[in-house]
Image 1: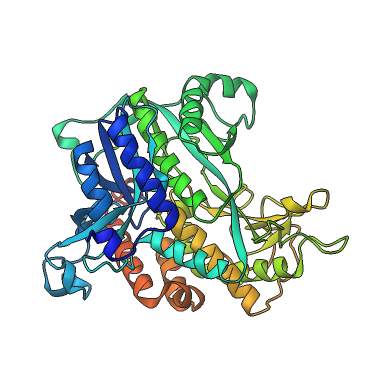
Image 2 (image 1 turned 120 degrees about the horizontal axis):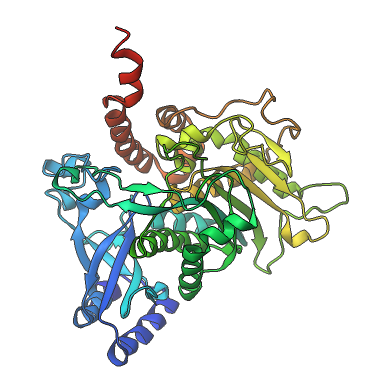
Length: 478
């Protein structure tokens, strides 16, 4: 019996999709299939298989080294995988032993910027068929299953900002191949601080039109393309989706954008605040609401003059109460905390407002259209892992419902309010995560310890690196 069948790893819809995929591989021009899984950082890793190898992968999965689960953002392995228990107490993967990628056939699609290459998301399992508890896609799926057990569905809408720059020098000299390697030299496509100006949209249109066509060809629910505040900065907005799909779509979108841009002589970055002069920070605004199984928006106000239903207010209160510990997932890079600036369209404290884009949480009331009632969290950075970002929101929001919390009054001047400040660094966010209890209960202590171990390795490297700022500040003075 095959590995997938023996451990009953597919749903009925996945089994049906696998049958259709086998037929497609036999009858269509597919030269290669990329099997990818999202790691802790939301970076896709995996293997590319020839069609002859796909029947085996669709029966038994694909073996891949477990050390990929323990990489920081420089691709360094941060645990001693060759020691007993791989340094994390898991005997089955010591020595960088294999885990198994199990394809999700419902995610298969052809990559439109290539002639005959397919792509599929995978889930990660141990050799005994148990899910790898560190895998972010498993974590969000479990959270969504618990929610659906209460007769509710999560609806999320994504607004993600990023920079598209012209590639000048790929920096591929021998000295550039470090860990991490040298970033490329780039230049602007258009000047900044012309928010939503049509002439800037036209200047960047040659590449955004390519991105638009390929995004739609991938089957992603793109709604709009907008010129953002800064130079060479754009925002792509997607229609709301349910369950796991928005997270899967964003993983694919970010990966696609970087590949497509590179092939056309551009460089796309989802880094929050690039260091080039006059750059503006990029954010990822996450709209969220709950529906019942009949599709009714459970956040819609029940009486005139209200912004949210009682359930919606409790969810809002939970987001506020758990915000400090969730920041480690909404803003998981050191660079992301340089976005939290007053009067910058980014939050700097834990507060909410009615249709106020300066507040961390912006309540958009659907007085004219109740189905559009939602809460927009403006805290996220575009480099966030979508599975962990969304799961952290769901867990803290549901805690508010379970505990029947009530939110404080809204703020009219979010940058002058007395609300608690957001953690000011990744280290402070990890401390808040360790001190909190909501996400420890929802995600499990083992996952939080794993996450903190990898991210604190990143913090330590940053803290021991001598920066240009330090050289300018101290080299001549002392």
